Length: 106
Image 1 (cartoon, rainbow, N blue to C red):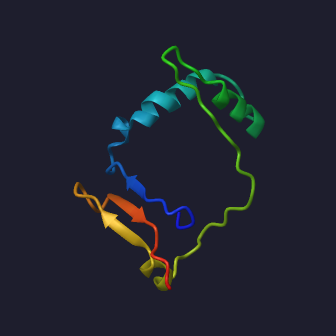
Image 2: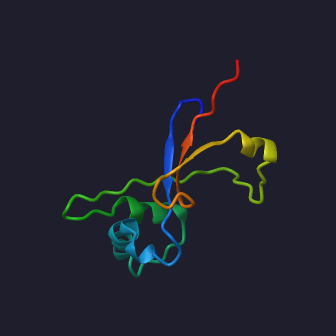
């Protein structure tokens, strides 16, 4: 994010409201229909079904498998956390915010 000087806005659905999430209804339901009844026994097969998901209204899906190690349980230090620039949103700022690029030290 800092390298490209991008701002990233994050918006979370409140707990218990995922039923209104348009991604879940429009995307995941179509993927589920595409692989219905098929044994999903390899990453390649799963990716094939995801990638071949299409609708008459123009939905097409791209999917990539990211290989590598993704360690869990990593902690952010207080010093690192202090360098993050957050701008809370006007609506529900606890769940919606923008991450801003850090200011370069001279």
